[in-house]
Image (cartoon, rainbow, N blue to C red; front, side):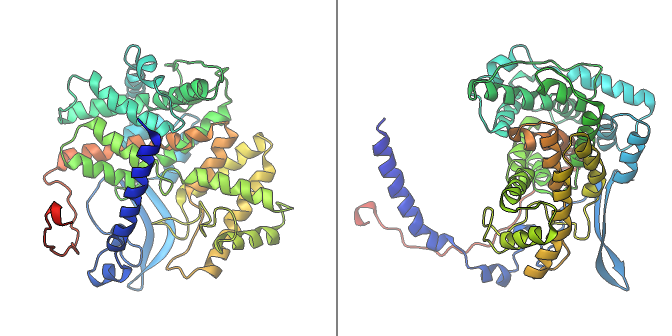
Length: 454
């Protein structure tokens, strides 16, 4: 087909759409006039209440003298403080991903026997169908590994004889299988891209049933399968911190919306993946890494706070980096004073930075985390405080673990699929109505013209 012919028509269609944009662009004042809560948020930033959940709790405000005021952020998984959960498995020196997965899915902490049995089930499910890697993952590899994962998830539906069965036991089985194979879908997808597109060596390492999820991710990713205990422990912490964050985040809400329609598990998780990959959601840590690289390239002394602050001011003034005016990794839709996940993560990030001889980089991250809120406070009129969020540190951690940039959002997905699964199951149990929000129409009726009169 003639490419120039196609391009000429696309250009014409684009021009037509450009003319239609005048009608498509809705004046901002109309949203306020009709009481529309854009982004399902009130004007003060609070989320519009659209559901109930027993899975997690996010607290960023408390009542003082009858008024709601910002407070230190708190995150509970099934009623347990995330700080206590992380301290519990780190002090006792074991990996936490499997234990916290059990907690989020079943609402209670497992006994030692229950945890061992659960690990065995995950290991049994940590297998892909025969020739799936060759026939699906290695075919048409893509630099966008999130798209590759989505393709793989939808294809896995073809191997499930009970794909549309919405009984709790069947959906639970499907969720456990997806949780188990997500690391393989991501890592193998990257290896296929790295070989067929980048011309690098190709290798596939199978997961080891004696290793944790975090250990297996590093084992499958690295050519020599080697990793340190500290590396695996820090990755395990990252997975736990990213596992769940309430029903109101974009990808989890997507999970609830698509589940409410009665769709199957594979379609639901594919939709959640598509939501997560956006740079305003799961892709945020990539922008942090790019921004920090830009800062290092444009200041002379990375330990000079005055110079760092001056450059951050340029970023906020849209004079530097991507000229969006955003300091990535700063601020959160819910938290204001602090993100508890970032506070937990920071200590482990510091240990890894010193182990990897990245002290200067850690110092720069710490300086930006301290200075950015000052700059944003001085430059912007905001309704709440700003602090570093978990994505501010996660990209730095992944770079120290030699995880390719293409897999950053995929690591998030490997963790968040647990939360999606818990919310899908909760939606299935409570499902009575499809989630269907209302939109105010601004359409006016027009007279139809015959095609001969246009």
